[in-house]
Every structure is written in structure tokens, then in C-alpha cells.
Image (spheres, helix red, strand yellow):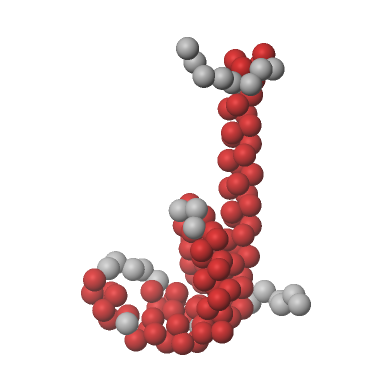
Length: 121
């Protein structure tokens, strides 16, 4: 069942994109998607909890856009969009890493000679 993309402001989209980029940068795609999918039924409670703890978090950490994160987490369609963003960025990053590995391996003398690389004497 495909849902229409949520109506997001440019700031909301920017926050979701930044979060998805950071998750992929840390290579935490699988735990993040698992958490998003598992916690989807509790999204309203999670957003309200974040709002409740906002003064404590703001006192301890520099978290810009915290209130915006909390409001986005309350919306289930935003969680689905975030999961899709993470999946797309992870696929792109994996393809780039694979292309880089293949290009790097093709440049080795063993790969050019058609022999598998072995231990060096």
C-alpha cells in the first residue's frame, strides 16, 4: 500500500535528509530502519516524550532543531519517509563503495595479470 508523500516544509525535509545522511554516514542503516519500523505504532508517544525531555536535553547537549525532530517523529508518514530516505542513501553509498573497491582491485598487479592476490614473500 503506497502512501502519498507527506506535505513537508523545506525545513522539515532538510532535517529528515540531514538525519538520513548521518545514519548512512555512520553505517547504522539496519538498526535505524529496524527501530523506525518497530517504533512506528508508538510514534506519538515518542514525540511527546521528546517534548517532555526537551529542557533536559537542551541543557546538556547542543541539539538544533530538537523541537522539529519531535514533531516529525509524531507523524507516522514522516517515519516511513525517513526509512525510505535511509534505504535510498544506503543503496547509493553501497554502490559507490562497491565501485570504489572494484576500481581499486582492478588496479592491482595481481588483478591486471589475472591471478588472485596471494601472500607476499
